[in-house]
Image (tube, rainbow, N blue to C red; front, side, top):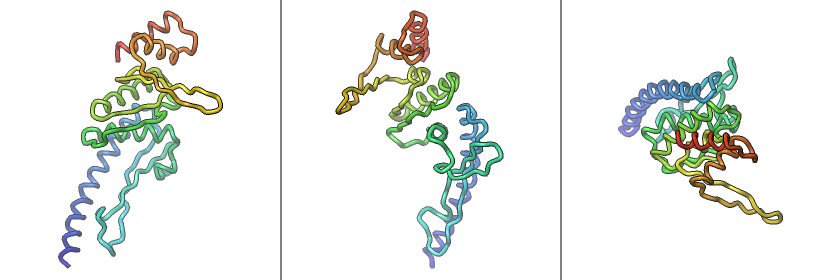
Length: 204
């Protein structure tokens, strides 16, 4: 009837916009993944047609993100192919690309910098700081380059033997410099390590 015809008209228009947007989004995500040391990845957006028996509120197709993390591999579903660290970086890339229209009040990134070097960690830190201007961004990290970019730095420590408790301490001033220094060089702090930590924080 008229309802089905209206649905087809709107679904067709939506499909066309999705096709255009999916190409652009995939391209921009790939560019961001290159900055995040994932140059060998292939990222695709699949538009999977739904059966037309029942008009679906989502339109004429379902959408799936596909990724191949090794050259020549066939892209597969993101949640089945990507490792935890890769998933975090792809999620970060998507959030950064969509940041202009993002509506999430809070984003959480856990170990987004696993298996990357200092130079890329700095890029990750810059991207996260950019997101932090629009939304609240919580980041779990062991990378000083990422921690130094945060607007605030919370130290998480575990105490107790029988019952373990996690404590959060807000670091500022010298205590933050010392913690970034420890992240840089381990337990032994030297004047040069502290100077490096201070420089990192000041430049952020």
